Image (cartoon, rainbow over all chains, first blue to last red; front, side, top):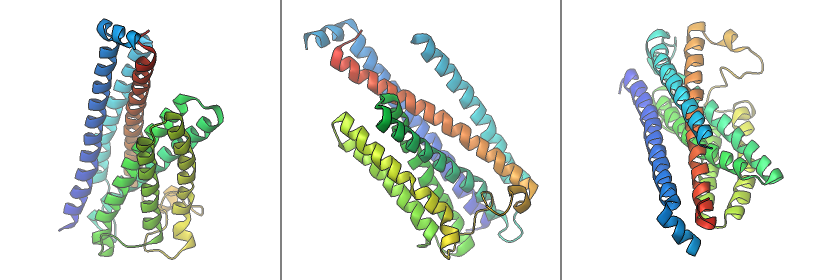
Amino acid sequence: MKAWDFVFLAYGIVWSALVFYLTVLRRRCRKIEAELVRLQSPGDKKKNEQK
Amino acid sequence: MASTTKKSGRGRSILGGLAFFFILMGLYFALIQAPPDAYQGEVQRIMYLHIPSILTAYLSFFIVFIGSALFLWKRERRDDILAYAAAEIGVLFTGLTIVEGSIWGKPAWGVWWTWDARLTLTAILLLIFVGYLMLRSLIEDEDQSAVCGAVLGIIGFLDIPLIHMSVYWWRTLHQPPSILRPDKLPWENVHPAMLIALSINFIAFLLVYFYLLSSRIRLGELQEEVKKTRLYGAA
């Protein structure tokens, strides 16, 4: 491996990992938002009240 | 509540845009503008990732320390959410620092890894906070999980001064600090063009960090809201 190969490997790994984490974080947020909307919907509200 | 969410969402978008701009600037300065090192050549450009990522990890664990101490003192959920969010992102940046260091170590030292004091202590820091995340997900009782996490978060942070001072206390392969030195100012020790590239990359990392942190805090708040809704029903 030449010097630039090490440099590009390091930059590639770091920025790919950060983009990957951000994508996963956004997906987790969307999932939990959908869950909250479902729980607050009138049908589920009734179910929660019955519980 | 809705307007606060909208405002924080707009703030996050601005932060994300700024982070993206500084990432591009940082890449230009690190890979094109900055001169190669006199001894190490082009491979030294990994420094523009390595130093900002470890400093960002230190900051993140400092936030864990503050959040944990505040939680143990006041028992407010928002402090625990902050500490938990900062720990998760701190683990990411510490892991990246070790990977970058390893990639830099191979051409500079001839090895991917060595049991040097600084490297070993950084690996211990990573393991402590991976343990923190495991502990948080394994303990079902929420209050107990938060208290145990807070104690571990405070203990884990104490490893950072050891990491920083390790290059002075023990004979190590890792070079002494270039920026945070007690005897010299940064511009007395680093070429101005390199210092500019490093500063821009550090700003980029900070912006990315705060963008990720605010998104992770938002996730923690939503999880809290879901739990409350399940317990007490929708308001």
